[in-house]
Amino acid sequence: MRHNKKFNHLGRTADHRRAMLANMAISLIMHKRITTTLAKAKELKKYVEPLITKAKEDSTNSRRVVFSYLQKKEAIKELFGPVAEKVGDRPGGYTRIIKLGTRLGDAAQICFIELVDFDPEMAKTETKKKATRRSRRSGSKQATEAPVEAPVAAEASAEAPVEAPVEAPAAE
Image 1 (cartoon, rainbow, N blue to C red):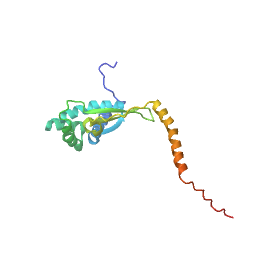
Image 2 (cartoon, rainbow, N blue to C red):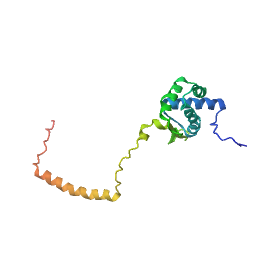
Image 3 (cartoon, one colour):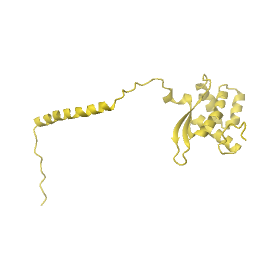
Image 4 (cartoon, rainbow, N blue to C red):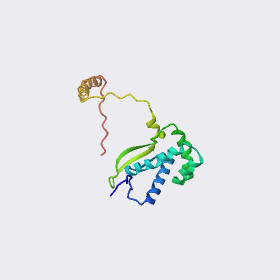
């Protein structure tokens, strides 16, 4: 029976899963965006968001607790530095998962997982004006206008002097 077993084991032993999630969390913190499968991204989200919440309070104890999960000094510096500054006022939801499609080899669902405040393209609040949509009727209208312009071009070419083509002398 599977009573009270809610998380995805990802087909790995507990030690392997813990090491993999720690490595993925370090990569996410250092690079701000990683590509992985959807199942791993969902588990990584559960793993890394409490660590980011812990990093909002910069104390020795919180650094030690986060270091026990991540085991990399550079990632801890990054997490308690720029990452904590950007997410300081956010109440939660520090990561975003964007689905990309399926992987070619095994049809696994692939996605981006990224830190929300570090994507400048998503942060733009300006809405661009949408171009007006054109129906197919306007395309046929343009097709009927094109022949009208063709005789005008023909008249212009008729007014210009026509030169006879120059023939190259044949090699004998």
